Image (cartoon, one colour):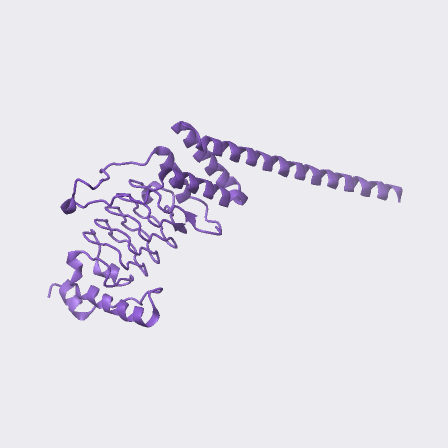
Length: 297
């Protein structure tokens, strides 16, 4: 009996020691994470580019290792981008070649974001797929010249579940980017590269897409009401046949009289009158006359 009791006490002591050790390890690790988080934030406030870059990548390491810190780290990176690039209310629009005016401030070809801002957006674009209680807030962020090309990432870059309302994305290279569940109302996407971008279900109300490259962009149920699509390259009637458009949508000249687009406008108008403009009409089938035109008959 004494041996049994002693063995039991020994087992309990060992178990208590293991619990204590595990708790001490967890507390120590938590303290290390907190310290690394604090140090990374201090680096973001540095006046040196190299130090800020180090802070961005330190936060990415924490983002990968600490799921419980996901929301805080994403909010810190979004705040860094937002506060550094916030657009003023009087940001000038980009003039297309035939509209150039000395009063317009243009973004030159080849412009790039500062390395620390580009790195911060890259981290957000490859963040782990975890539950986020609210959209990442990048409203009015100045991201002209941003480069997020799908072939430079291990998986397609994601700017999904974000507020990009009124963001400046002029001449941004966004080929293959996933924008699903994001809101880009009033965003400036003049001359942006959006080839193969996932824009299905995205809110682009009154967005400026003049001169944007839209080759194979997915526009299923995309809200393009009041959007400016003049001089878009690669945009087809087939793409618009599944998007939400209306008479306020400014279309490229080559598509204004296209029978398929005309039929889509009629379908969307009927749908909006019956169901409201909060949803999108079902896809519009290609009219017979449009098929004859595409076949060259």
